[in-house]
Image (cartoon, rainbow, N blue to C red):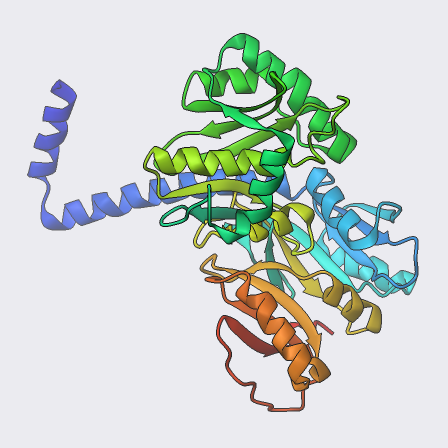
Length: 401
């Protein structure tokens, strides 16, 4: 109390010019503090280990991953090159050192991938900003999930056929242990193996003490799957676990989708208008991404999960690079963090009414996000037509040669 009074007296005694100088000093101190925190995060993410990565097959591009070797790098590289890709390590070196070493070895790198953070999305190359994760929301307003909502027609059928019923118990220590040890760990190991991002049992115990909520599915009187929700202004579906190894295959019978179905219904009844269903990897052909789009989820505007991104730079305009890009559409971000489903197509697709209609249909799946399609070999100064939720861009703007 005394300190606040002395502070107020100090402020009153300052002239206008002195107060301006004082405010500038405070802003400088704060900016330095924020910059230090951001730099620490950047330094953690960008451990300057460079790897030249090649697929076991010759039809995939050669990639340079320049950053930390972790779960994120494994996912991106496996998605791009397959599980049997090989690495050539350059050590902790700068971007220029990587380029010079490649030139001396006579190696042409096709794609350069640089993990960083959104606040430091600067690079020596023209790049696309790819988030580590794409986050999804669901608009619950006006949707009859129990009876009519089209995206859940098959989910409703298989939920009833399997006999799944929802229960919403309190998060007790015994249930947390059961959920973690008998559902979460076996489920993520079955799906991701050693590359799974694992939580600890203590992590869920911490959630229980704050804003966590349990949803379980019962089948034949036994708990067979569960979900942890983080309750707040916009609830978030946080973690899913499914009991594996039973005589009945609960995952194959639709337990994963049924959890979303019952969670949506309950959140509606509780008066929520939107929910966040968590993150998926940013590639449009990722199974989790496809599933969330199919059940009516949409990429979130102005928000990405955490701040990590990968700057993707095209270093060569070769057939294998083009084929890889066409097979691996992904979410990219603009400087305002707006998500854009990003496609790559030849000019012949743009000129073909049937193929163009198919692309338009794909783009509409992701609305209200505006998709963008980079076009190979378009004529110089060609002006593309405008389409709803779909922009066309000349691929040449991305090439670093």
